[in-house]
Length: 301
Image (cartoon, rainbow, N blue to C red; front, side, top):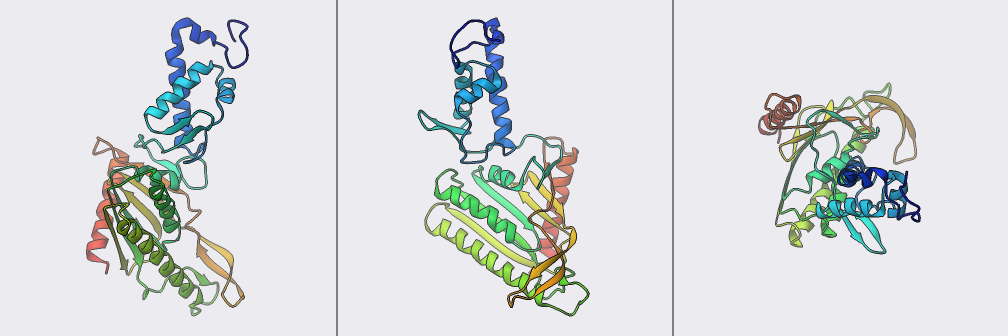
């Protein structure tokens, strides 16, 4: 409760008047950091107005402003009088415990990739059925680079895809293993997405926005049962493909019942390598990196 009769927005919380104001602004700042990290306030969005934060947290406007200054000094937000506070970047992931990414609220794929692209040197190793969702997420990072929101000096991406000559169990027309139309459709989509990736990355290099850009795509005679993202040697996102039955419309307008996997909506687990070499996060990231390197070196072209 306020300790005096000052007008709304100018009140002083009793806890602040008791000498714990520092703890109050830290509490607010941490709450806002968490919301930026979990996607409540996405990149390029604006935080609520200060008057709303005053009401929500039950603190003075000075406390809110102090918390916002902290976030601005960390370069998480950009505050301009009259324009509000815009989210500039996502705090780096700290926890080494597995967390859930995907459809459920929590660590989503875009947030983790955006955090990885805050680094000066960005490395990504990706194993996937197609490059559809990857292309979409990386295009968002390309836009951030053009806007000068991030300025990586090097980007290195290694992409592992299934070989075009390998028969895939999905997608396929249900009940007709000889029908190859869905697999031809999948390969055509993959070619379009990888061509778009190459074009976007080449433009970053030729326009001088990123000095060093390396994109290498290889194919392996394996059917991906999962998708895997390894980032900057310290993070891994891993998600199993679930086979579902759904309707797909072909180019000629025919609608077929297909057995397929939906990588875009797959739930993924997030693992972070830490200082303990034997922690679950460190072991998972290290083992998946070793697996990727072995396939890249020995089973891909």
